[in-house]
Length: 477
Image 1: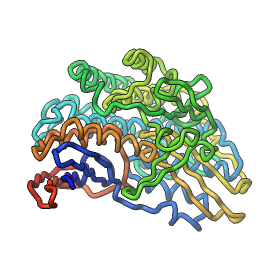
Image 2: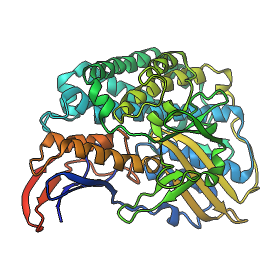
Image 3: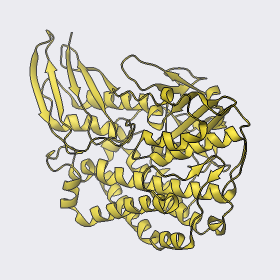
Image 4: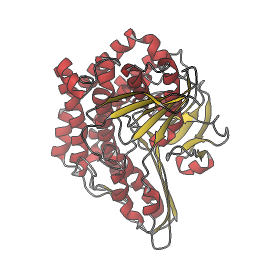
């Protein structure tokens, strides 16, 4: 019986989780696990609700990425009605989605991952936070705030509210875009592109100084899954799903609404979060990663010019093969941030974006509906089964973070084995374990959560179960 180190809660992520590191008698890491220890039960308590209520109910799953759930739910409801929303409605939905991507990616890089990269993994926890970023580089911090604000303003101008919008409805949307709102958003595009590029410069500078860490930090082979268009370019709102192996060989390209034919879910007793996998390869050989790293590995290109140039640089990292290091999520996230700003510009300049043809009417045609979308953190499924009255009989949600569940646990174990040795556990080692999780930007919460001090305590026990050391710290979320 060896010793156990517990990190609880993990900080600078959305929601609540803990890490348990098991040491053998020699003080070496035997295994480490990422435990998701909050249960939400959304799938069960939605049963009996009317299907058209779901875009407003399920967006309450999270206060950071509500638009992703809102739109995935609306797409599932479209299928229940058997209707195709008018093109202007799809343009507006995608525009709101770009706002979601911009605000989420910008917040994560500058405010959640930034303290580690800009101030150092071993920096004093008292300054290794967003306040420390402001003090170290106030100009960059201001640009980060403006970027996130821009994303939120897109959501608000399109859907009236920055959080939990009432906009997408079965068959389309409930509000047309005004010329004034379109012009206001376009006026800021050039500045926003420059701000993302400034962040890109910071990331590239860090990468150049820490190349070995980029290549080895939680680096391991998996499959990669992403939504793509007909040219295998990254598609965030609509498209086919493409799955590739670690050598970028295509395993599948399929209609995401038929996910049950391709995706299974493994269960472990120590986590409330399931472990999705590719059915044909089985568990655990069929595990895959999603999100920015998954999308750039699975796709062949990006459909906007500046982001495509960065993507071409990305492809040089591992000589065209999949990029496997978990810290590369941060670089990929910024490339996507740039794409989202450029794509927002393309959408706003489309003449049909101001059309009032925004909704298609229909009746219940199908007793199942599946909505698929690329949330900031990866592929998201909403699957509803309804009766003849439109009441939900069953709900299945596979969230983006769930798709990365195996990878996060693997990342934690890889980093723990590298940096944790015996009972001399440094604060920087603990932070690196958390950073392995933060790279995936997991969203574990069901809605907005408490803001304030989130203490972390690590307790080390000897083989007899006696406490030999306790390390505590507080972190301001």
